[in-house]
Image 1 (tube, helix red, strand yellow):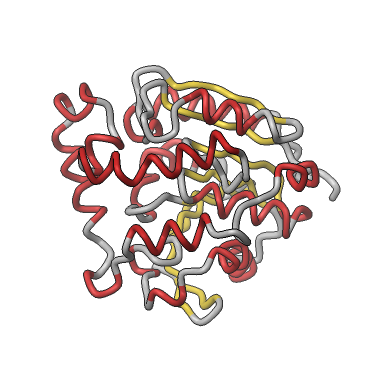
Image 2 (cartoon, rainbow, N blue to C red; image 1 turned 90 degrees about the horizontal axis):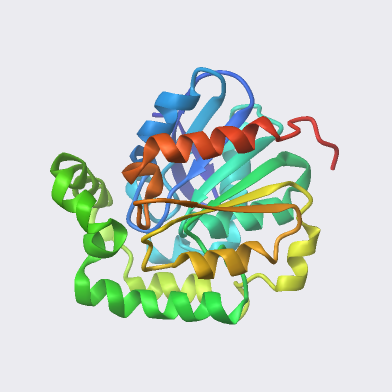
Length: 267
């Protein structure tokens, strides 16, 4: 598994395939393994990269290294190491913060932006309220219960078990406290002003699961409406992780979006 250093931390990533680059960015509690169904589908026509986000998996480290101002540079460091000039980012939940920051800081390197089940750092009241409600809900019901639909939990025990093991991939000594994660991504200087979104020149696709109780479709649709050149879609019979629960439907939606991306778009 290759690695690259960014802002004092070793970032671990996986790469497969050839063609226009897709960079997959996971959310809180995950790591690069979460995207195995997307690698299976897209590595035949794309260069697929998934990395362990700063603070998680094998890219974990001291809590002081988990700062949202580093997120965009982390992606840039991986692209530089692989000599990739431009990519489309596919970002879930916390990964949406990374995607938006990268698109704003490096517009000439962003062909497209896919935001999955994420409020994407947008300073919008409905989004902030959803983020604030996510912590007590997760604590009361457990991460699995809010991440997946009841039918998936009952009918796909092996995939649920895999997800549980993925969550345990971050060394105990480096597991981040939820309060710290929340403070670092929702602080006064970390959210993205709605007016700033007008600077995002690439097309964006916003995906949500029909049954997502962390960020319900109405929340994601409101966020998507603030992005220029945006699309919004809902994956039926899926909760907070539609790329895992309904991979065929998710990959189909992603394929349609990618077919419309201008990979040589000027800045």
